[in-house]
Image (cartoon, rainbow, N blue to C red):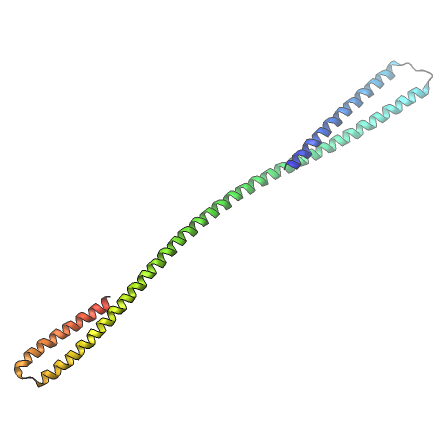
Length: 192
């Protein structure tokens, strides 16, 4: 961008110097014309011819300078349009950069939140594993007790078969107690 500005400044300086030269040449031509008009025709035809040549040269230089000046102006206009387009593109790129920075910041925040959530889930997972291990141990203990209860129940049945009618009522009471205990154990087993 600064390189283009330097080029534009250089072209402006060159155009100003060209305009000054053109103005000097026009002044010289005007002086020569005035001098020619004021001079009566003299027998010296060579002097007039050299002055005419000089006037023609100056006219040619003037035309060339005007052409060059017009080219400089066109080039300067083109560079100005290019500079405006470049500034618009720079502005758009700055906006894009701002958007990308905001998006990167948002992604960083999302990553931080996801990392925190992941750590929380890992901790909860560890707690659930510990709880599962405790429940498995409790289930094993309850199964052992149930096996012991089932063996006791079998023994009681055998005793009942051998018992007298007075023991029948006691046997029914034990059966009901064992059934209730079994239901309670199952309930505890499946509740955990």
